[in-house]
Image 1 (tube, one colour):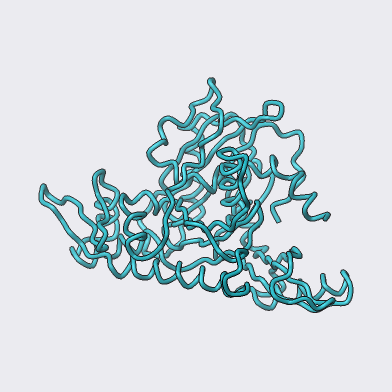
Image 2: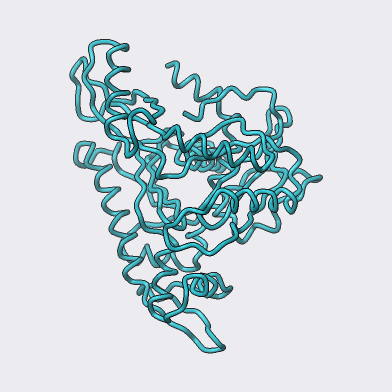
Length: 380
Protein backbone atom coordinates (compact mmCIF):
# COMPACT_ATOMS: atom_id res chain seq x y z
CA UNK A 1 0.00 0.00 0.00
CA UNK A 2 1.25 3.45 -0.80
CA UNK A 3 3.41 2.09 -3.65
CA UNK A 4 1.78 3.82 -6.61
CA UNK A 5 3.11 4.51 -10.10
CA UNK A 6 3.09 8.28 -10.37
CA UNK A 7 6.12 8.93 -12.55
CA UNK A 8 5.91 12.05 -14.67
CA UNK A 9 4.09 14.02 -11.97
CA UNK A 10 6.47 16.75 -10.87
CA UNK A 11 4.09 18.75 -8.64
CA UNK A 12 1.89 17.13 -6.02
CA UNK A 13 0.30 17.97 -2.69
CA UNK A 14 0.19 15.73 0.36
CA UNK A 15 -3.23 16.32 1.92
CA UNK A 16 -3.85 15.21 5.51
CA UNK A 17 -7.52 15.42 6.54
CA UNK A 18 -7.93 15.50 10.31
CA UNK A 19 -10.97 15.75 12.54
CA UNK A 20 -10.65 19.52 13.17
CA UNK A 21 -8.41 20.77 10.38
CA UNK A 22 -6.65 19.86 7.17
CA UNK A 23 -2.96 20.33 6.43
CA UNK A 24 -1.22 20.18 3.09
CA UNK A 25 2.28 20.46 1.64
CA UNK A 26 3.13 20.94 -2.03
CA UNK A 27 6.44 19.63 -3.37
CA UNK A 28 8.15 20.02 -6.72
CA UNK A 29 10.69 17.66 -8.24
CA UNK A 30 13.65 19.46 -9.79
CA UNK A 31 15.99 16.87 -11.16
CA UNK A 32 16.99 14.64 -8.27
CA UNK A 33 15.91 17.18 -5.64
CA UNK A 34 12.49 17.49 -4.03
CA UNK A 35 11.68 21.11 -3.20
CA UNK A 36 8.87 22.44 -1.01
CA UNK A 37 6.69 24.96 -2.81
CA UNK A 38 3.98 25.80 -0.26
CA UNK A 39 2.37 24.58 2.94
CA UNK A 40 -0.77 25.53 4.79
CA UNK A 41 -3.68 24.48 6.95
CA UNK A 42 -7.35 25.29 7.30
CA UNK A 43 -9.90 24.63 10.03
CA UNK A 44 -12.84 22.42 9.15
CA UNK A 45 -15.94 24.54 9.87
CA UNK A 46 -18.63 23.39 12.27
CA UNK A 47 -18.57 22.48 15.95
CA UNK A 48 -18.47 18.74 16.58
CA UNK A 49 -18.73 16.54 19.61
CA UNK A 50 -15.58 14.90 20.85
CA UNK A 51 -14.42 12.01 18.60
CA UNK A 52 -17.05 12.87 15.96
CA UNK A 53 -15.93 12.94 12.33
CA UNK A 54 -16.55 16.06 10.23
CA UNK A 55 -19.11 15.83 7.44
CA UNK A 56 -17.91 15.66 3.85
CA UNK A 57 -19.35 19.06 2.88
CA UNK A 58 -17.39 20.80 5.66
CA UNK A 59 -14.16 19.09 4.59
CA UNK A 60 -14.72 20.12 0.97
CA UNK A 61 -15.27 23.71 2.10
CA UNK A 62 -12.01 23.65 4.08
CA UNK A 63 -10.09 22.22 1.11
CA UNK A 64 -11.33 24.94 -1.23
CA UNK A 65 -10.42 27.60 1.32
CA UNK A 66 -6.93 26.15 1.75
CA UNK A 67 -6.21 25.95 -1.98
CA UNK A 68 -7.13 29.59 -2.27
CA UNK A 69 -5.00 30.78 0.66
CA UNK A 70 -1.95 28.53 0.18
CA UNK A 71 -1.47 29.32 -3.52
CA UNK A 72 -0.88 25.69 -4.48
CA UNK A 73 0.05 25.31 -8.16
CA UNK A 74 -1.41 21.83 -8.65
CA UNK A 75 -4.58 19.97 -7.78
CA UNK A 76 -2.90 16.55 -7.89
CA UNK A 77 -2.94 15.12 -4.39
CA UNK A 78 -1.87 12.14 -2.32
CA UNK A 79 -4.32 11.41 0.51
CA UNK A 80 -4.19 9.47 3.77
CA UNK A 81 -6.83 7.13 5.15
CA UNK A 82 -8.20 7.87 8.64
CA UNK A 83 -6.63 5.64 11.34
CA UNK A 84 -9.94 3.87 12.03
CA UNK A 85 -9.98 2.60 8.44
CA UNK A 86 -6.58 0.90 8.60
CA UNK A 87 -5.63 -2.36 10.34
CA UNK A 88 -1.93 -3.24 10.80
CA UNK A 89 -0.77 -6.45 12.44
CA UNK A 90 2.48 -8.38 12.80
CA UNK A 91 2.20 -12.19 12.85
CA UNK A 92 4.24 -15.37 12.47
CA UNK A 93 2.54 -17.34 9.70
CA UNK A 94 3.30 -20.85 8.55
CA UNK A 95 3.23 -21.55 4.81
CA UNK A 96 5.24 -23.92 2.55
CA UNK A 97 5.41 -21.55 -0.44
CA UNK A 98 4.75 -17.97 -1.53
CA UNK A 99 1.28 -18.68 -2.91
CA UNK A 100 0.11 -20.27 0.33
CA UNK A 101 1.72 -17.46 2.36
CA UNK A 102 -0.15 -14.85 0.31
CA UNK A 103 -3.48 -16.63 0.85
CA UNK A 104 -2.84 -17.10 4.59
CA UNK A 105 -1.69 -13.50 5.09
CA UNK A 106 -4.63 -12.01 3.27
CA UNK A 107 -7.11 -14.21 5.14
CA UNK A 108 -5.56 -13.28 8.50
CA UNK A 109 -5.70 -9.56 7.73
CA UNK A 110 -9.30 -9.73 6.53
CA UNK A 111 -10.35 -11.65 9.68
CA UNK A 112 -8.66 -9.23 12.07
CA UNK A 113 -9.74 -5.95 10.48
CA UNK A 114 -12.47 -3.94 12.27
CA UNK A 115 -14.54 -3.84 9.08
CA UNK A 116 -16.15 -6.57 6.93
CA UNK A 117 -13.79 -8.87 5.04
CA UNK A 118 -15.67 -8.01 1.84
CA UNK A 119 -14.71 -4.36 2.41
CA UNK A 120 -11.00 -5.04 3.02
CA UNK A 121 -8.16 -4.16 0.66
CA UNK A 122 -5.29 -6.32 1.92
CA UNK A 123 -1.51 -6.23 1.48
CA UNK A 124 1.39 -7.78 3.36
CA UNK A 125 5.18 -7.71 3.61
CA UNK A 126 7.56 -10.41 4.81
CA UNK A 127 10.01 -9.07 7.40
CA UNK A 128 13.08 -10.53 9.07
CA UNK A 129 12.25 -13.30 11.53
CA UNK A 130 11.79 -12.49 15.21
CA UNK A 131 12.49 -15.38 17.52
CA UNK A 132 11.40 -18.20 15.17
CA UNK A 133 13.81 -20.08 12.92
CA UNK A 134 11.47 -22.75 11.54
CA UNK A 135 11.85 -23.16 7.80
CA UNK A 136 8.23 -22.49 6.80
CA UNK A 137 7.42 -19.84 9.42
CA UNK A 138 7.47 -16.25 8.21
CA UNK A 139 7.23 -12.99 10.12
CA UNK A 140 4.73 -10.85 8.23
CA UNK A 141 3.35 -7.32 8.47
CA UNK A 142 -0.31 -7.32 7.45
CA UNK A 143 -2.18 -4.23 6.30
CA UNK A 144 -5.89 -4.02 5.57
CA UNK A 145 -7.75 -0.89 4.54
CA UNK A 146 -11.45 -0.22 4.17
CA UNK A 147 -12.46 0.07 0.53
CA UNK A 148 -15.40 2.20 1.62
CA UNK A 149 -13.05 4.64 3.35
CA UNK A 150 -10.88 4.81 0.23
CA UNK A 151 -13.94 5.73 -1.83
CA UNK A 152 -14.97 8.35 0.72
CA UNK A 153 -11.65 10.23 0.69
CA UNK A 154 -11.49 10.02 -3.11
CA UNK A 155 -15.03 11.41 -3.39
CA UNK A 156 -14.19 14.29 -1.03
CA UNK A 157 -11.10 15.20 -3.05
CA UNK A 158 -12.90 15.01 -6.38
CA UNK A 159 -15.88 17.03 -5.09
CA UNK A 160 -13.39 19.71 -4.04
CA UNK A 161 -12.03 19.78 -7.59
CA UNK A 162 -8.80 17.90 -6.85
CA UNK A 163 -7.14 15.08 -8.79
CA UNK A 164 -6.20 12.17 -6.46
CA UNK A 165 -3.17 10.21 -7.60
CA UNK A 166 -2.75 7.93 -4.57
CA UNK A 167 -4.24 6.97 -1.22
CA UNK A 168 -1.67 6.06 1.41
CA UNK A 169 -1.52 4.83 4.99
CA UNK A 170 -0.78 7.59 7.51
CA UNK A 171 1.77 5.49 9.41
CA UNK A 172 3.82 5.01 6.26
CA UNK A 173 3.68 8.72 5.48
CA UNK A 174 4.91 9.63 8.96
CA UNK A 175 7.96 7.38 8.82
CA UNK A 176 8.71 8.44 5.24
CA UNK A 177 8.97 12.05 6.37
CA UNK A 178 10.86 11.16 9.54
CA UNK A 179 13.37 8.79 7.93
CA UNK A 180 14.30 11.20 5.16
CA UNK A 181 15.03 13.84 7.78
CA UNK A 182 17.26 11.43 9.69
CA UNK A 183 19.20 10.55 6.58
CA UNK A 184 19.59 14.22 5.74
CA UNK A 185 20.80 15.04 9.23
CA UNK A 186 23.38 12.27 9.49
CA UNK A 187 25.09 10.13 6.85
CA UNK A 188 26.12 7.77 9.67
CA UNK A 189 22.52 6.91 10.56
CA UNK A 190 22.91 3.57 12.37
CA UNK A 191 19.45 2.14 11.78
CA UNK A 192 18.66 1.76 15.49
CA UNK A 193 14.90 1.34 16.13
CA UNK A 194 13.34 4.75 16.69
CA UNK A 195 10.07 5.39 18.52
CA UNK A 196 7.81 8.18 17.33
CA UNK A 197 4.42 9.48 18.49
CA UNK A 198 2.12 11.37 16.16
CA UNK A 199 -0.42 13.06 18.46
CA UNK A 200 -3.64 13.90 16.69
CA UNK A 201 -6.93 15.27 17.97
CA UNK A 202 -8.70 11.97 18.69
CA UNK A 203 -5.84 9.48 18.68
CA UNK A 204 -2.09 9.01 18.84
CA UNK A 205 -0.12 6.89 16.40
CA UNK A 206 2.82 5.17 18.09
CA UNK A 207 5.38 3.78 15.65
CA UNK A 208 8.78 2.16 15.72
CA UNK A 209 10.88 2.40 12.57
CA UNK A 210 14.25 1.07 11.53
CA UNK A 211 16.11 1.95 8.36
CA UNK A 212 13.01 3.31 6.65
CA UNK A 213 10.92 0.25 7.49
CA UNK A 214 7.87 0.26 9.73
CA UNK A 215 8.58 -2.24 12.52
CA UNK A 216 5.60 -1.50 14.74
CA UNK A 217 2.50 0.71 14.68
CA UNK A 218 -0.38 1.10 17.10
CA UNK A 219 -3.11 3.73 17.25
CA UNK A 220 -4.39 4.54 20.74
CA UNK A 221 -7.56 6.53 21.57
CA UNK A 222 -5.97 9.47 23.35
CA UNK A 223 -4.99 12.81 21.82
CA UNK A 224 -5.35 16.56 21.92
CA UNK A 225 -9.11 16.39 22.49
CA UNK A 226 -8.49 14.75 25.87
CA UNK A 227 -6.75 17.92 27.05
CA UNK A 228 -9.63 20.00 25.69
CA UNK A 229 -12.06 17.80 27.61
CA UNK A 230 -10.09 18.36 30.82
CA UNK A 231 -10.51 22.14 30.37
CA UNK A 232 -14.23 21.79 29.63
CA UNK A 233 -14.79 19.56 32.68
CA UNK A 234 -12.90 21.91 35.00
CA UNK A 235 -14.52 25.13 33.78
CA UNK A 236 -17.96 24.09 32.57
CA UNK A 237 -17.23 25.64 29.19
CA UNK A 238 -18.25 24.13 25.86
CA UNK A 239 -15.71 22.07 23.96
CA UNK A 240 -15.37 24.86 21.38
CA UNK A 241 -14.57 27.43 24.10
CA UNK A 242 -12.21 25.00 25.85
CA UNK A 243 -10.41 24.40 22.56
CA UNK A 244 -9.91 28.14 22.09
CA UNK A 245 -8.34 28.38 25.54
CA UNK A 246 -6.01 25.46 24.79
CA UNK A 247 -4.85 27.08 21.55
CA UNK A 248 -4.23 30.51 23.07
CA UNK A 249 -0.56 31.56 22.74
CA UNK A 250 1.33 31.11 26.00
CA UNK A 251 -0.63 28.08 27.21
CA UNK A 252 1.71 25.45 28.61
CA UNK A 253 1.73 22.04 30.23
CA UNK A 254 3.74 21.71 33.45
CA UNK A 255 5.72 18.68 34.59
CA UNK A 256 2.95 17.59 36.98
CA UNK A 257 0.39 17.47 34.16
CA UNK A 258 -1.29 20.82 34.87
CA UNK A 259 -2.28 23.03 31.96
CA UNK A 260 -1.65 26.71 32.69
CA UNK A 261 -3.65 29.20 30.64
CA UNK A 262 -5.32 32.58 30.96
CA UNK A 263 -9.04 33.30 31.16
CA UNK A 264 -10.55 36.75 31.52
CA UNK A 265 -7.15 38.16 32.46
CA UNK A 266 -6.60 35.66 35.27
CA UNK A 267 -4.44 32.57 35.41
CA UNK A 268 -6.30 29.32 34.84
CA UNK A 269 -4.73 26.07 36.02
CA UNK A 270 -6.38 22.81 34.96
CA UNK A 271 -5.27 19.32 35.92
CA UNK A 272 -4.67 17.22 32.80
CA UNK A 273 -3.07 14.39 34.75
CA UNK A 274 -5.62 11.88 33.45
CA UNK A 275 -4.86 12.69 29.79
CA UNK A 276 -1.10 12.69 30.36
CA UNK A 277 -1.34 9.45 32.33
CA UNK A 278 -3.28 7.69 29.58
CA UNK A 279 -0.82 8.80 26.92
CA UNK A 280 2.18 7.74 29.00
CA UNK A 281 0.66 4.33 29.79
CA UNK A 282 -0.11 3.66 26.13
CA UNK A 283 3.40 4.66 25.08
CA UNK A 284 4.98 2.46 27.74
CA UNK A 285 2.69 -0.44 26.86
CA UNK A 286 3.37 -0.17 23.14
CA UNK A 287 7.15 0.04 23.47
CA UNK A 288 7.16 -2.81 26.00
CA UNK A 289 5.25 -4.98 23.54
CA UNK A 290 7.72 -4.13 20.77
CA UNK A 291 10.69 -5.06 22.94
CA UNK A 292 9.01 -8.34 23.95
CA UNK A 293 9.28 -9.57 20.36
CA UNK A 294 13.04 -9.89 20.75
CA UNK A 295 15.28 -11.76 23.15
CA UNK A 296 15.75 -9.91 26.42
CA UNK A 297 18.57 -7.39 26.09
CA UNK A 298 18.76 -7.76 22.30
CA UNK A 299 19.91 -4.57 20.59
CA UNK A 300 17.27 -5.24 17.89
CA UNK A 301 14.53 -4.28 20.32
CA UNK A 302 16.30 -1.42 22.08
CA UNK A 303 14.56 1.74 20.88
CA UNK A 304 16.25 5.09 21.13
CA UNK A 305 14.68 8.19 22.61
CA UNK A 306 11.21 8.99 21.27
CA UNK A 307 10.20 11.93 19.11
CA UNK A 308 6.87 13.72 18.76
CA UNK A 309 4.87 15.29 15.95
CA UNK A 310 1.27 16.11 15.10
CA UNK A 311 -1.02 18.92 16.17
CA UNK A 312 -1.10 17.64 19.75
CA UNK A 313 2.67 18.01 19.96
CA UNK A 314 2.24 21.79 19.61
CA UNK A 315 0.99 21.99 23.20
CA UNK A 316 3.93 23.72 24.84
CA UNK A 317 5.67 21.60 27.45
CA UNK A 318 4.16 18.26 26.44
CA UNK A 319 7.57 16.78 25.59
CA UNK A 320 9.05 17.75 28.97
CA UNK A 321 5.92 16.51 30.74
CA UNK A 322 6.16 13.09 29.06
CA UNK A 323 9.86 12.90 29.89
CA UNK A 324 9.13 13.61 33.55
CA UNK A 325 6.68 10.71 33.41
CA UNK A 326 9.41 8.28 32.35
CA UNK A 327 9.36 8.55 28.53
CA UNK A 328 12.81 9.27 27.08
CA UNK A 329 12.18 12.18 24.74
CA UNK A 330 14.46 13.57 22.05
CA UNK A 331 12.57 16.39 20.39
CA UNK A 332 9.48 17.57 18.59
CA UNK A 333 9.99 16.94 14.89
CA UNK A 334 10.24 19.73 12.32
CA UNK A 335 9.68 17.74 9.10
CA UNK A 336 10.87 20.59 6.88
CA UNK A 337 14.49 20.40 8.09
CA UNK A 338 16.87 19.55 5.23
CA UNK A 339 14.56 20.61 2.40
CA UNK A 340 15.02 23.49 0.00
CA UNK A 341 12.10 25.88 -0.44
CA UNK A 342 11.06 27.20 -3.85
CA UNK A 343 11.53 30.96 -4.11
CA UNK A 344 8.40 31.40 -6.22
CA UNK A 345 6.06 29.62 -3.82
CA UNK A 346 4.37 30.82 -0.66
CA UNK A 347 6.95 28.84 1.30
CA UNK A 348 6.83 27.66 4.89
CA UNK A 349 7.85 30.73 6.92
CA UNK A 350 4.26 31.20 8.07
CA UNK A 351 4.02 27.64 9.44
CA UNK A 352 7.35 27.44 11.28
CA UNK A 353 5.70 27.57 14.69
CA UNK A 354 3.33 24.73 13.77
CA UNK A 355 5.71 22.63 11.65
CA UNK A 356 5.15 19.46 13.71
CA UNK A 357 1.60 19.11 12.44
CA UNK A 358 2.79 18.82 8.81
CA UNK A 359 4.68 15.54 9.23
CA UNK A 360 1.98 13.36 7.65
CA UNK A 361 1.20 15.82 4.85
CA UNK A 362 4.87 16.08 3.85
CA UNK A 363 5.27 12.29 3.97
CA UNK A 364 2.28 11.91 1.68
CA UNK A 365 3.76 14.39 -0.79
CA UNK A 366 7.01 12.41 -0.82
CA UNK A 367 5.29 9.13 -1.75
CA UNK A 368 6.34 9.28 -5.41
CA UNK A 369 9.88 10.19 -4.37
CA UNK A 370 10.10 6.88 -2.49
CA UNK A 371 8.26 4.63 -4.96
CA UNK A 372 11.38 3.14 -6.54
CA UNK A 373 12.86 2.29 -3.15
CA UNK A 374 9.62 0.70 -2.00
CA UNK A 375 9.30 -1.38 -5.14
CA UNK A 376 12.87 -2.64 -4.75
CA UNK A 377 12.14 -3.69 -1.16
CA UNK A 378 8.94 -5.45 -2.14
CA UNK A 379 10.68 -7.17 -5.01
CA UNK A 380 13.42 -8.36 -2.66
